[in-house]
Length: 481
Image (tube, rainbow, N blue to C red; front, side, top):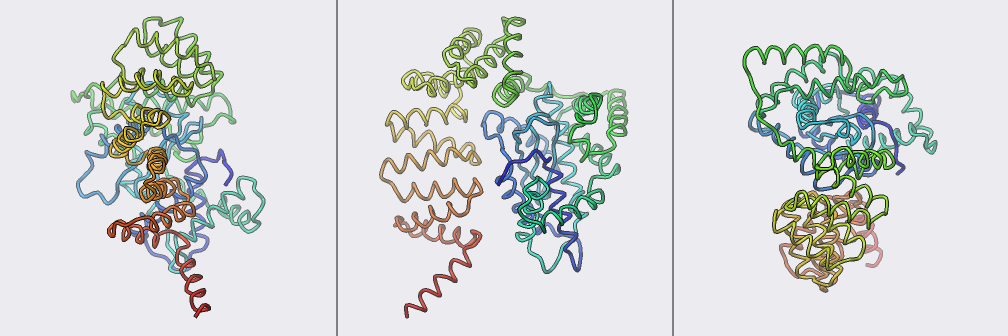
């Protein structure tokens, strides 16, 4: 499926509009249907967009998101999950059932955790208020999986595929009706009201929401070509600015204060995201200038080392990362970055020593565990690699690449039952059910454990297309008889 720069929420609007176009009889969508629609949507997102899986970035964003979600009323029907889309635009959106997406370009424009928390709280509020879900009418005749497939055709047609004429036609209908599904002014103000409450409960001031809204609003001054995608899906920004400003003034007058935030943790995350996922040429110049301007700041050397490694200049990257370590010798992030460059340069002994140092400082640091496992695997230290990847998965179960390399590690140990099972999980999380099925079927053939066999059979039954596969096998058996 081809990549596209169409904003995520606009894509979701296509999905919902297709639903409305096809609906025959209608009633409110249920929580269960909302969750199913969220799952189908995730399958298409995984196939259509690049998500950043960098554990340092993803863990931090989820940490801030969970700080907000923890203060929601008890008995939440959803498990909130936070994702970063690798695209340099100002955008963020939420889908039904608690999936929240932030674009790397918007995070790069931020200067504090308060700004990140402000956007997240606003999107959480949209989910809590069910603003999109309440606009959906469900059809008794059309399944959500079928709807998601149709919507994918709409998306490809809208992106210029030209392969499915009916999808393009439906896409034009969707475009005409999208205004009825976009957030209204009332939706936005309510989301800000709820969001500011959530921020206060989580110990944030709300100033960050006002700051990032002003940045988004200011970008429109560069001309119509620069209007952020966020404004097309989140209207009434001037009204929102007025509300946020008034709310902050009221809170200040009443003496409300916020808890100090993890400034250093934000800076590390922001430095890594900018250096590894921003525009390479611009970022290279930015950190080169920063090193000259702030020679005592270890994070300027850290960022410069990261972008140098990204550009292929590993020797220079090592030099600057060592300078960063001279200024902060006990930083697991800097040690991990240096170990990563050693690993990529094939200097496995140095990588091993450096990454073991990072893990000794912070035993559950995801990125350090990942590259430590990769290094151990390359050096043939298979039992150590297995332990590193298993620890990583226990700490970050959504980190897909850990499953892949754990599966490879099992395979090199001739443990084919666990190898195929773990690779099946990897492809399942990656959104590739066909490859997942092949791995699970091989795991079933190699597994002696009866409980594991039952688990695999249940997974296979839930995979798309399994019913059709079973029918073909039954027909073959009948013919054989």
